[in-house]
Image (cartoon, rainbow, N blue to C red; front, side, top):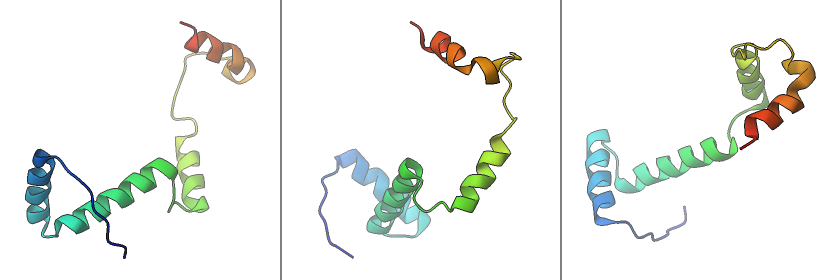
Length: 84
């Protein structure tokens, strides 16, 4: 591990101490877990290709637009959706 220093607000330290005590871990461990979670959620690192495929298949067909021409007119619908 690499030692590093960070500056936190007083309220952040208070809340981290409480949370760490409630979970039975050190503040450092809680921060490491938080950094790991942020990296996973932001970059998808740690998610296998198989898991990505499983999630994509599970999401396919779960949402309905109410339109029957989305596959053929998707560009037009996007333009309309983002028009101010």
